[in-house]
Image (cartoon, rainbow over all chains, first blue to last red):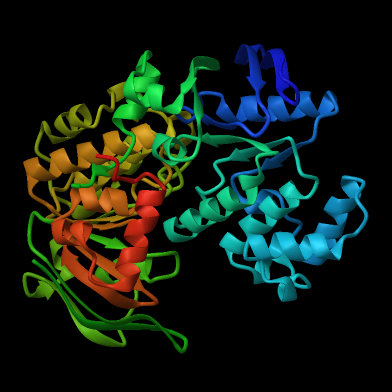
Length: 230
Length: 241
């Protein structure tokens, strides 16, 4: 195993006797950009959660950004308070310079950190959640449908900012999405899930060109709405 | 034809719609795109006559829109059904309300086209998938054969594969039945693939109104270009050809 890579073996999840995730092993290299795609109910989020829990139990630094910022933010606390809380949870001392730097990179208005989430646009809330996730320079950032609660202009801007923040290559990402079009442009390797199994694991270009399973071909066939004329 | 002429809707002091004019010919599709809060759903409410106009006029073939009994397909498919009734009961409510007998085979025919089984119609909303619920919503909208159907984000609750399948079903049924479709969506990719005209709304105003093929090639407005670039960045429009 290469240095700095993350490894889980035979991960599985059952709930009330039903297998949601069949035994799955996965290796993620340092800084790798990985996409996890599949239809609703195929087990993507289940794998994401199980992966986060297992890797944290191994002592690895893993951060998780849920689909909607509502799931991650406390409506009663100021953003500044939630920032300090996140630092404390990671055992970090308050660091004003780091806050400035992350907020600037993700276009978060530092002068509004005293407000509660409901004063903020959803796009900025989601960027704030991403900023918190990046605080401890995680080895893996799990992004679970990070843009589906955002409208497209904001979503595109958020993904672009995220790309620039992750350009240092220390943090691997796992982008979970039902939308192959979204994943195709920003990950190097794709995992396709179907009925609780990873049915394909391939380089993005190879998978797009030659999907081997019905689940993957359905996704590639429906990758985008329209191919633009050159 | 649906005619929207110089329509303004006020919510308090804010102009939720500001001097909107549109034409949607029978059988065609007009997509209304724009970011959250642009006024897309307000436009639907105005066309349906659910909110009053501060100014302007909306008509179908010169008469009030309500006379043509337009139908609405909603964004959250399961929430659009009464949880205490079977899907069949809710689907038939507009038929009962219209007090006009349904052609004998219309329900069976539409169920067949929308891949909904008799057994499924006996279930309640929480016992079916979101994709099935949205197809049932389309069934309810089309039973009375309305000449105008409004779709409020009809695909946004669905996964990518189900989205494309449902979009094609809507288009096929439109080709067979000839209803005009006003589709509100934030997904420019969907709009680009399935409409004749695109109206870009921003802050209650029309930023751009264009024939879809022209818009997809080269939007004329700055905001139209921003939307197109976002759709490309998110993979909804594929520029890799």
